[in-house]
Length: 108
Image (cartoon, rainbow, N blue to C red; front, side):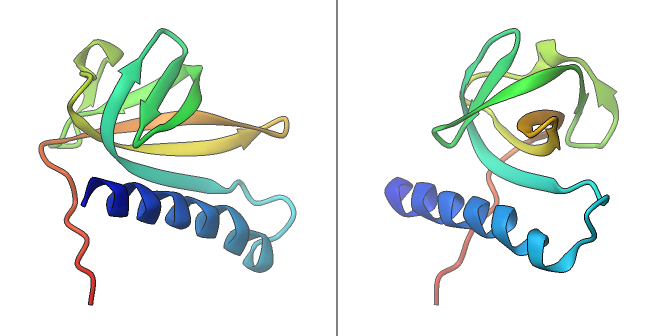
C-alpha cells in the first residue's frame, strides 16, 4: 500500500507540475502541493514521501488548526502538506501545514 501511495504522490506531483503550464499566464506564481509522511528534516530541506525539497529561509509553518507555528513543530514520522513555489527556476518549500493523519486516497 505504501508503494501505491508513493507512486500516486509522484504521479500527482508530475500532473501538478505539467498541467498549470497549460492553463496559467506567464507571470502567475505556480503552487505545487505534496502531502504525506515527513521522512527527514534539516535546516534547509524536507523529505515528504521520498521527495526531497529545499526550504526558503522564510518558510511558514501552520498547525492542523491553521494557526501559525514554527519549524521546530515539524517532526520526522509526522504528516504534513507542503506548498512548493518556483523561485529563479528552482523549487522551494514556501509553507508547511502540519497534519494529524494522512489523507486517505480511495482507488476505484
